[in-house]
Image 1 (cartoon, one colour):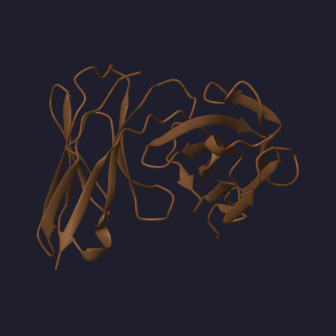
Image 2 (tube, one colour):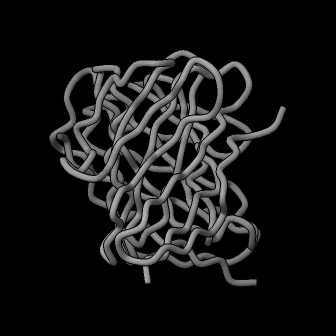
Length: 111
Length: 114
């Protein structure tokens, strides 16, 4: 299974943008890049996903490197409610639902 | 549209007892996934079920654990003869058409084994 590498923790100030990096140098050509986040005492929540092109939705943006070996989740204006563990996950092309969660990045947002 | 519902939210069992965890997927979703999160660890995939079928159980422990998703009713994760090492948060997720879709997770069941 392809592996992802994320920083253990990051800090941000409220109302400022946050860039959460993820390295996935062993990604295969058909792996999708998914991001989920988990708030304390809750289940993971889908944030965004993409294959090759950059993606935007109401929660965040996903910037994918041209060689697909890394990606960045962008929160445009962090709020206190964005404090969570953010997981970068590679979803294989096979249809198994087997998401491989790493340790993720714990994001702290300071008021 | 209610989200993925899991119950109970907290479950306490003594060693050797059985634990039954329930998961009702979102309306219209026929694919269910179970994950386990041990203390201070990341989530680990356990099993993927579609109505009445187990699609992938590669993450299930070989003994004492079973899962089903009957034609009618919720999905059940069953743990027989629980041990302290089974203490964890168990999360269920669902999707409408299959694993390539985004998954919707429930709030989990926290199992504590005394």
